[in-house]
Length: 126
Image 1 (cartoon, rainbow, N blue to C red):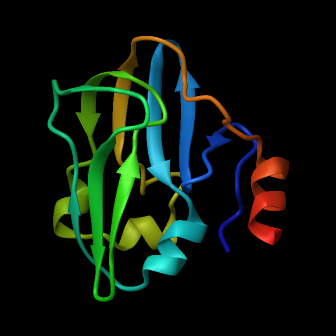
Image 2: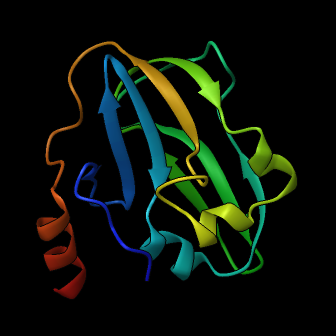
């Protein structure tokens, strides 16, 4: 298990979001990566794409499953982690750092029900 940071919020579907100055960085949690298994492909949204809260915006494929990533916030995608297209290992080794997926210029409120670390970990235990 990675050390889950306190400076992000978590979704019930295992995405995380870090908001800094009007831009949100989005990724998936260590729990999601662990349950997907060996990763083989990441399909991220395009830079400039407008995304809406709650919609599927990316896919992460493993040898055993395909997982969808849902937008925890709406806005315009301003950056994607291009390193992941060739090498998905940072998703497992550093999911809250180098394994980030994309960044969004925020337009609107984050998804309802975002959790702090303690609430997220309590959900995992239930």
